[in-house]
Image (tube, rainbow, N blue to C red; front, side, top):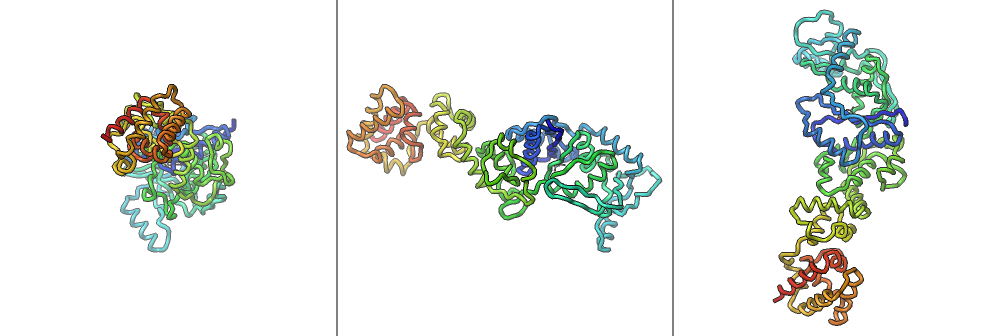
Length: 464
Ligand code: GLU
């Protein structure tokens, strides 16, 4: 057991997106690998935009991906007393101050600064103010003016800024609510987080947060900022590039292990290996192999991985997932063949669970009508004899395994003098309704004698 403590700290203002899930995964993997602790913290201080629905969606997505946490979820909304006490501490130590500048005044200052060619920064009017009038105010952190703030990022290397580039950040708003950059410091410190792994959109926050750690007397943790994820056009990943919500991929029939495998490769590599189980990842993951350049989102690769995991998945587990989908579509799966057997016939053919469910339907629902083109070609009056022979030959079987079935078809071929190519497609249309299905022998076997004979007889009857 190491003393590593990492965390995932989502803001519940929407679903769990690809980037957030990757951050959660990296934290999870490192914690597991080093037998440290993975904390989940819900950053819900933005009351307007935070919703319980989003919290639930995030928890559900983490659960689906298998990212279990050791501590939490902690909610920032329940920790306001702590934050208030830290504001008071800083005020008492003279490391924070009340700022009475109005929004209009601040805008005017900002514009003036920009006109003068400077940065649009707070000019520090209230920094040395000693009176405390009864008027609305915010509280600002007194960022040191001299020297610089530097840290060694575990991914990006040394990052340094001059302190006079930094603003006096607002740590408490006029309504008394604390702000993100302030509470994140308190929480990470109080929760004993010693390595903060998050997206590199936070680098600018980190250099603002470090002086606050110091002012509050906390040890500064290590940081690892993970490069962002781009679309194929090298623009920041957005809905234009495909679904960005992890759970939408579940709905589209993706397996969580495919998603995990895909996410980890958005920024991390291990030689030229592509296939990683969660156990592999726990063994092999390290921040040293996280690249410095942005990951590019490639839906085709995700689909390729999904196909792989469907091909190699445990039929029984896949059966449960396909059963759920079919039941959701109102298909009666109780009175049909064994779902694992069904899945085995489709694993080589389906790229997603949705495709698999689609391909499995005919096993449970006899065709009501036949595909017109298929029937016109393969279910024609001259096929009466073949269908009769097949019915006879199959009904005489006393056992019904694949070899028996093959033998029955050989017999039909001999009797009729026809090749399998002249028999199989007809049988397929009769059983399935169209021209696409797993191998006929497998279909006949999995459907079972009774269903097969009944479907063949129905097709025969349709020929008049
Ligand atoms: N709550 C922040 C977000 O969702 C993350 C904060 C952090 O990781 O420090 O972007």
